[in-house]
Structures are given as structure tokens and as C-alpha cells.
Length: 408
Image 1 (cartoon, rainbow, N blue to C red):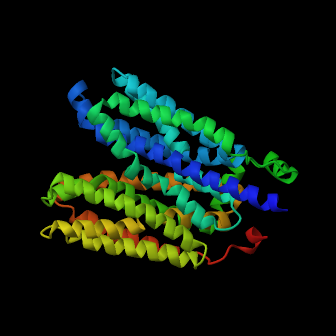
Image 2 (cartoon, one colour; image 1 turned 45 degrees about the vertical axis):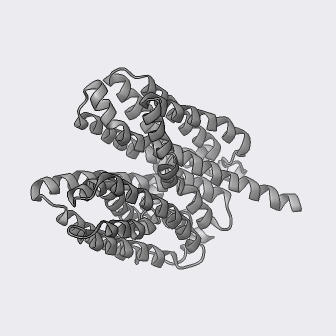
Image 3 (cartoon, rainbow, N blue to C red; image 1 turned 120 degrees about the vertical axis):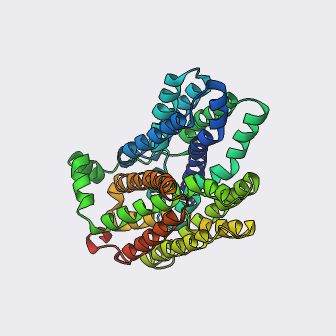
């Protein structure tokens, strides 16, 4: 009896560890684009608009891939899906490391890497963890998915060091080696968790992706989570990750302290995700999600008052926003598992994550457009306040417990 308790627990936390590492590598690969952009401009004579366009294309491909990646983990399990993503990421990074022209860059980053980013995503890791945990799902999901921000805090400085002391090719080369090295580790350490019972096999034999899609969109919970997560993407990936550092420069803050504040935001973000996951196991989850979005709205009010203030206020903002930045991920994943259904969780989270990517693209584009039109970021921060508050109101329409038919 002791074995039946200890072995699953050990295996489950292995999923958390490898999910954290996989997200760290994937998100660091995404961040490397902006870090190395000035070098490519100088070496190849490429414009920032061209490099950014390739990056935007990668985001679009990620949004397209997300639902299919979710469906893949529903059908083939965590081990297969994570290994596929790491393989694609490793191939893409080595192509970028060896590139000597635009075509190889597009194939490597907007092709293989982009699909790898779409597979190694927070919704895939969240689904993998939820499938392997019967208790403390929120805490485990928070720890695993915090790799998304932990990678930016831990691995990106190593990429920068390689860029400084070696070359940008070594930066992508090491990312490729690390991604490919993770594959045998996952293969040997993670048990296959694809559905194997006769009941599940029977269900899946008659359940197509189209049928699961219809099942998901018929659930009111999905629509609340989809639109709130789209707003989440607008106010995080789109607005803060794209425009915070340009805004800091607009306020007259030096680059190094501004980048340090952003690093602090990433560190607090990691802690915020873990705490939110822990709380989702213990408190009313819709109210927790509402509180996260409302607090995020308040941080944008603080950000709007930065011009004319001291640099210290930028660090204050970094701490407060970091607390609620990606904190929505473990709570949203927990609600999808209980309210939409674990059987289709991967596909549902993939569809919701696609909404997050779309919101991020809208935030990135509108932020630049509004600044060009008005000469300030005031309208962007104001709209972000109301959108975040609106997402909080949306979360109030969620039930505290799962519908009876899903609970059964």
C-alpha cells in the first residue's frame, strides 16, 4: 500500500519539474528575439519592423497551434506532447543559430520555433499537471506554469552573457542543446499518461475534435473564461511586456534601472503564480479571479501617474503588477478542469490561450497606434484600467462549484 501512495506522488512532482523547465526554455527563446534584435540589425542590416514582423508572425502561429496542442495532450498525453514541443523548439533554435539570411530566419523562428512555442505553452503544462494531481492541483499548476516567467528571470541573463562573451549564435545554440537534452530526461522520468482505460478509449473513439469543440462552446463557463483571458492577454503580453520599457524611457528613466525593474516584475510574477495556485485550492476561485483582475486595474492607475514621479515608483509598480501578472493562469486552469471538464481540458485551455494571444497582439498594436496618435500612453493605461475591471466583473458570473453533471 505504501508503494501505491509514494510512487504517484513522486511521478506527479516530476511533471511539475519538467513543465517548469520546458516553459523556462520556451519563454526564454521568445524573449531572446528582442534581446538580440539590435545585433541582427547591425550584422545583417535588417530593419526592426522586419524582425518584429517575424516575431508577430510567430505569435499568430502560436495562437493557431494552441487548440491543436491542447487536443494533442488530451489524446496522446503529457510525455509525448512535451517531447514533441521540445524537439520542434530545438530544431528551430539550431536553424536560427546557423542562419545566414532571411529565409532561414523565417523557417527557424516563425516556423519550427513558433510551433514549438505553441506546444510548450502554459495551457499544455497546466493540463499535464492537472491530469497527474488529485489534490493540490492549484499549487502544482502554479509552480509548473511559473516557469513561463521564471525562465525570463533565470535563463535570459545567461543568454545575454553568451551574447556578450561569445556570439548570438551561441545563445540560440545553447537553447537548442538544452531543449533537445530535455527530451530523453522527460522520456525516462515521466510515465505516459495518455488515456488508457476502456471507458476512455470508447469515449474517444466516438468523440471527434469538432464534437469536443461544440461541447466546449456550449458551456457558459468557457465564454466567461475566454473573454476574461483575452483581456488578460491585452493587459499583460500586449500592454506591459511590449510597452512598459518604452514608457519608462518616455518618462525619462535610464535603461538599466528600467530593465532592473522589469526583472523584479518577473521575479514577483513567479511568486504570484505560485501563491495564486495555492489559494485556488483553498478559497472561492471566481472571487479570487475577480480580485486578481481588480487589483490589476488598480496597478494601471498607479502606472498612469508615473510621468513626473521618481524612479522608485516604477519599482513599486513592478512589485504590485508582478503579483497579479500571470496569477490568472493557475486559477483559470483550475476552473476549466472543474467546470468545463478534464476530458477536454487541453482543447478548452488551448482555445482560451488562443484568445490570450489574440488579446496580446491587440494590446501590442493598439499601444503603439495610440502613442503615435496622441503622443502619450494615457489612453492605453485608461483603457487597460477599464478592461481589467471588466474582466473582474465577468469572473463574478462564474459558479463557485462545478455543474453537477461535470462533478459526477
